Image 1 (tube, one colour):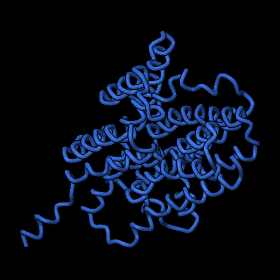
Image 2 (spheres, chains in turn brown, blue):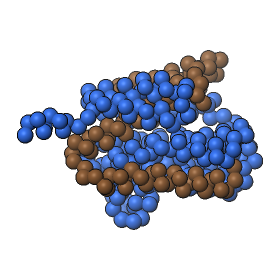
Image 3 (cartoon, each protein chain N blue to C red):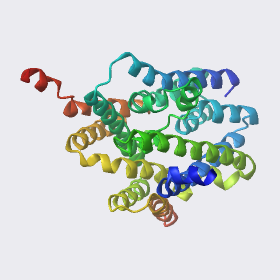
Image 4 (cartoon, chains in turn cyan, brown):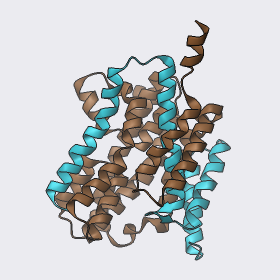
Length: 102
Length: 231
């Protein structure tokens, strides 16, 4: 990595981040469009959770990772505080790996 | 004065921000430790963490560079991964579009988690703004502290998988989106999108599958058609 790569990555990322609100400014956002855009972001976030729970570098990540996320998910669904969700998810995955289950 | 700020933010949000920030600090430490171990000069590591400011893309860029990828491959990997910030900005961009400096800071603060925290507040725009900035501040402080620590700790923290960190971050996002999945159309769109993303994952570069998931939105089109029919 050299400074040119970092600079291009930084400027490109900033422009990507900037494009959402700029596009938004060009359209009149009705209440329904608002709901639709929120839904779009939720869809992307859920897909991110799904892919990052089972894939690691384009390969099956093993059982420990999805198991941890699932434990966190169940706790969140039962309305556990976020701190509990985080610790339980990380601990489940870490302990499974410690036990030799990848 | 300080007390009033805490009061405005609220105990629950502060507690959640603290829990989440611990995870980010560990991630920051891991990033700096890996970068340092790879022989990256300290100022390059800092430039990435402050100006790119997107953890997933930073780890991926390091990985591609370590595998001997070209400069173009490094940049392309990072930028494709970051494209998901476009739908995020569309959804929450108005929350910080006030003054020139809130626009700049808010733009840099656009992350998976700050978006998820803001969306989790539902239709309450005031709370969404507070959540966006509070979690963003927590993230920034934790990320900087973590990076600083990682440069010196090195070694074991470079393998945060042992601590289960890779499960903690998706679990946080999952916890934040679960309430909005009570809406049936959102649930249907998200489930379809997740299946599409998973199916596409082995074939597309990381970052593209989650965008392809947006196809799931066909189940959640605005009801414009019906209204036109009514008038």
